Length: 165
Length: 109
Image (cartoon, rainbow over all chains, first blue to last red; front, side, top):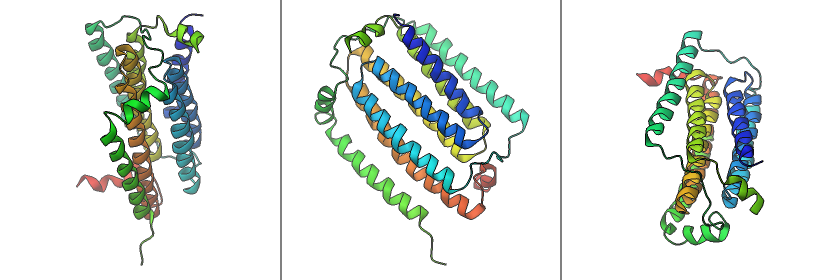
């Protein structure tokens, strides 16, 4: 078995993320995105980052996906009548993305940091360890993120409120 | 859980970097080639997730829990971004009856 689980899941993530951007129907895109996020959760479990796996599962596959689906259904966009970009723009976009892949991988090959990933401390990603980190050195950013969430909530409510005519 | 962790041994760090680079670039291609604003948002989410995975991998590599705390903060940021962004999309749809980003090209001037 060995490392084949990682390569299988990595193949699935790449395949489903390709399906996200090439699916015609936006609802299908959202469903493929859910599967992609699930493969990311499996990656976190393979890295033994259990807290991140659970948070990824709840926040991304729960909250954010419900938000996306809700807006899609609310706006009645679940028909594939999206006006497509011209073929030229698509080809140029794909070529640009492939150039980005080649550049990133080529530049990282030069650094040659290819030693295998070994989990030294098996408690690294557990809730106890991360909680100590979060409420110790990262106390101020943690509290500030609650203000950020409050601001986002107020902003979303204000933006979607119908103005008085 | 020990059995799963055993499987981890031997995956080179480079392969995590390649996977993250490929998924990030897929997100970039999605932003460049799609016109539906909601699909563009999903591509941005893909890019954020690629960075999250890379941060988690490097956190394991350096045996430093700070990387996983950063992933947590990025998730908070993504949640706030999606809430505000989708409300902007709803507002645009109410005014223009579509989510086509080419309708919004008046923002250029």
